[in-house]
Image (cartoon, rainbow, N blue to C red):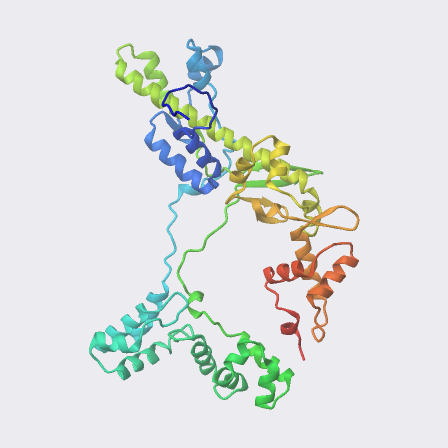
Amino acid sequence: MEMKMGMRMAMQQRLVMTPRLQQALKLLQMPTLELQQVLKQEILKNPLLEEEDEIEELDENEIQEKEGKEEEDSDWEEVFETAFNMGGTGGEETEQRDDMLERVPVARQSFSDNLLSQLRLATDDEQMLEIGEYLIGSLDDSGYMIGSLDDIARTFNVEEEVVRNILELVQTFDPSGVGARNIKECLMLQLERKDMLGSKAAIIIADYFEEFKQRKYLDISKKMKISLKEIQVQAGIIATLDPKPGLSVFADNPKYVIPDLIVDRVDDKYIITLNERNVPRLRISKAYRDELKTNPKISTETKDFIKGRLKNAKWLIQTIEQRRRTMIKVMECIVDKQRDFFEKGVIALKPLTLQQVAVEIDMHESTVSRVTTSKYVQTPRGVYGLKFFFSAKLSTKSGTDVSSRSAKMKIEKILQKEDSKKPLSDQKIADILKADGLIIARRTVAKYREQLGILPARHRKEY
């Protein structure tokens, strides 16, 4: 067969991700707090964008002129006279602005700074201070020593015993257990601080720690010649100790959840609003409009600059408005589908998928996914991530479907009522749920139990 090279024309459809489309998708996915920062940056970059709060009030003559006359240029009228308001109430003049006063961040001492302060109070010896600072710098976030004492001794050209003595000094600092080289030593340090080194709990950790980790209480009972009930009492004491003492004072600033949407109940209806109190409300700059209208000497270059910035500003305002409508639309669908949750709680949560919502509101599934990613809603029942309302379905004898989250709650309630001396197996839990009308496999019960952080039956048994 003879092969020839040639050219031919063909038409095909494909989606081209233009920079504007990419930015629109990013804005859609952004949580409110991040959007707030992005819009403030856009205001700084684009002189045609202004925050509504920054615009001076018009005097009476200007108001009358605005109300009594129409703009001559219809193209500009569409943009400037709309006075776009980004979903806020606009007229809440009675609301006090928190940003009128400068917010001074509360100074928080870091984990290492906390220990260094204690070190400087404990000694003024230069060598001990130097090695002690190095040791404190070698602790991980949980408070454990991750360096080798031998290596540290060589670094400072001292005997290992010297480094060990300084580490023992650090181990006397707060929080109790800090500076330990493993979890066993950490727990023993805490028991020593409680003056419990000779207790049964200390003996269990010192001599039977591996068996204790594997919850082989019967083996420990036989070796220590005490009852299983006493072993469980000691296990309860050990459970009060902190295996990661450093995290209790780690100085990460607390991360607050700021809801992006708010659902309020008014009579028998649920009203959905965007939480945009701190998001800049944008409009086009009046000053540039007046400059174009009243200055006949404005250069072509300046006109082109203003028109270019105007185009970008108008597109941004339209995109934010589209984001607002989309978020409201998605949340309205979720509230409609999960109304039983708002009425009765998690136990009434229904199975729901992104595809179901996408079909309902006539949008692409990826759009719904972006809207629900990293966003939270404040409801009468608490603050939830939007992803919380989506879960797999389980069948029932009645033919209806229930949410996997609802199944987890049922499992949790069953285990809360179980006899601790005769804990329920996963199969028994599945049988109870089946008798209640929920069809669920034993392995599914085991998976949900593990996700709830509940131990197997043999480890829940009390003597």
